[in-house]
Image (cartoon, rainbow over all chains, first blue to last red; front, side, top):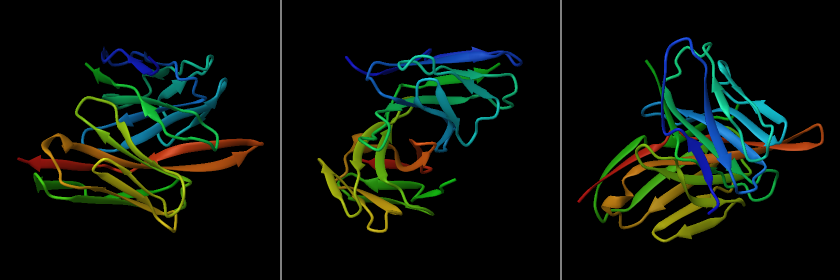
Length: 114
Length: 117
């Protein structure tokens, strides 16, 4: 089945450590996105990528890094520079460009700093 | 960046009632999307709108792309308990840079819907 997969579902990190969240899609989508969701709030864009080897900062990119070496994969690294990393992280993908632009989401990763 | 205002923030209704929520933007969007999110899960796409004035239905859900391209609404008719969740609008703005088209989704803050049996 086609879809977008995030792993792990739950992740615990010690303060001062970097951690990488995985996002893989087999929908042949060009565009991929990372969002952060805090309790009771909407989704805020961290980074997005329209094509392989290209990505753009979103509204809250500080303390995060991404790579887009393959079309199927868009991993997000939460660095120690991110002051408040505990949140629910959502990855999405879409066909991209000016065509059909629905974005489909993964199940999310809940990151907790301990 | 674009600002999206979604209202109301929350709704408490009785089963069988109709629901209406809307989003307004400070700038024009090319696409409007409506999602539903259940606790601990990713948002699921409900309806996509591509043209100003477009009115689209999906079962008991109806959404419209405003004529000005700066607003959209979602209606749910005859609500049922499983309609409970957070509903998000999202707008997509397309821009060109260096010969490449870019687009990003901007989300509203969400409407928390509670349905009492």
